[in-house]
Length: 285
Image 1 (cartoon, rainbow, N blue to C red):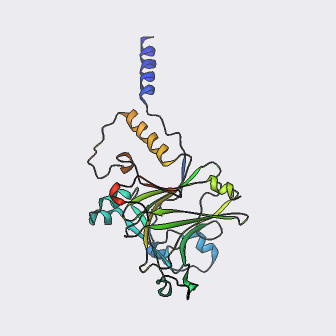
Image 2: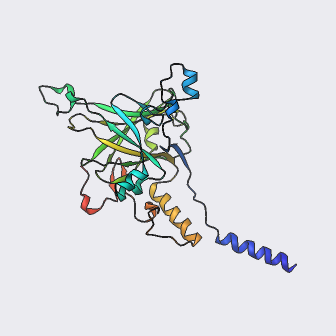
Image 3: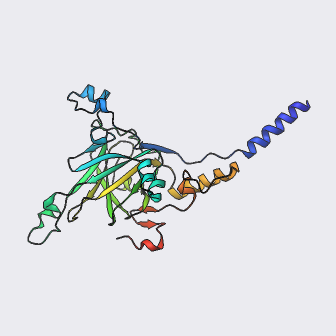
């Protein structure tokens, strides 16, 4: 009897000290951890082969790219070797995707009234259910937010556009700023899809692109972790901190492997503006 009471008391004590799991759900659309396979680095001309053994030309992580969007893998080790700590902490895995958005030479000059033809040039990458590029989740109804980690190594802020379409060809676009020189988490409220009359249960494609007309140099952005969430970045961070505190585990805050989201508020970019930027960074352009 005493043994049973002791066991029950131990179970009660243990369960009372167990950290609560996060109440928020996440699904990953692309973690950018894929790397090219040299054996498969060749073109496929028949659909069955392409679906069974897709190639990874230009380390494209199976995203659909045009000739003007060049995609390649970049590793956490490269950031460490460059002693770029903000960039090093940007990585949540071993690799991310470095994308160069090429600007054609005749679009590098700003448009003029006499030559308005180069007023817009779109370069992008996409995931779609209708091509060999996989969009792993088409029913987005259980989620509230689309999030993407972005690092802009350039000296100029970049306005990243996101286009989403559904099964009935309804399309909506939104945008947020990737601040120059800072890793940022972009977040988009999925309620905007319903407002645009998209069927959130039948999403067919996601495209990330820049309007690069007038830029003298090809802009480069680095992407990681395209995900769907039921909570905002701030809500999920708070839940993670509470879960960590409940475990009462000691953290080595000087470790290079520490989670940056638990050390300082992240830089968050939404269509309405940016939060978390250091004062020295100034306002987003």
